[in-house]
Length: 204
Image (cartoon, rainbow, N blue to C red):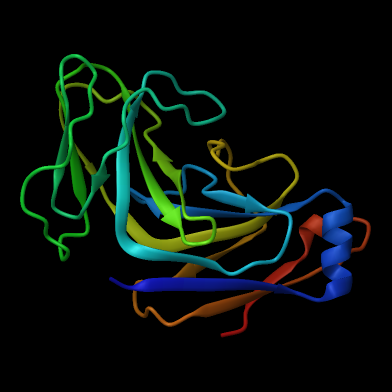
């Protein structure tokens, strides 16, 4: 199981500017080709670390600004399936695991419901949402395809578990699909009167 790590670096003066302006550092993980949910947010600079193949699935009967859980959240591995039964119970994962497949499944026997997935950042050791379908899923099999790409940005209003409702313009995407080596990015404040609209760049 691979461990991934990305660090966001700021000059101390720039960090003071963004923190005093009320910005916090956000990260999202790509699932099914998009970034859907704020995975976590911080008011300090810290490495983001996580491991591959660690996920949970869940169902949610409503979709709003924040992710809400309506079922249990069983662990699942690539290749496996969790069944949401007709009573709305999310059953434990079953079927053969297949680490090379890059996807896992929810068999929905309940009816219209939003399907979501959790992943775990190593700092804090907490399972947090990385995905919630933007439309209700009907009966049948639903595939979830997480990709080892993350989006990092500063935000005034979004926080952990918030659904990303509009495009994030000033951000940086970090791609681990070709290498598991640790990566680092750097943020520079270019306008002290608007510290949240600075410049991102990769430094390793």
